[in-house]
Length: 162
Image (cartoon, rainbow, N blue to C red; front, side, top):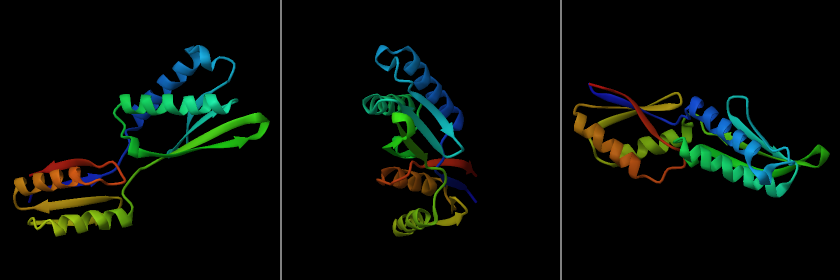
């Protein structure tokens, strides 16, 4: 029986590449000189941008967004970025990465699939949704349906099997 999985993941290698490019731009751009602006991965699920000036932090956040988009990471995959003051006159913003589909979002997805009237079955399996059907064409229609939704998370479709 043909099936595929719906997931929400961020390619960590592309994320590292985008962060490295942003850090290189911070080091080379004239307007970032002397502000000690840095960007780094904090744990598995967040990115931290830090600077000594609030204006440069906002510019650093914009550079990070541009690099993420250039590397093919959906802007919906990162959230947060509020400016917070930390000690020593420095400011910081923390960006959270969306990894996996939560239970509430998975229920919404399966409800949309059931309401579509297509002859497929959707099951929640941990942080992903498995869709099964008798015809591959029905599965492709489900993919088009889910791509057309304005969903809060970036969705990827993997493990297409016949």
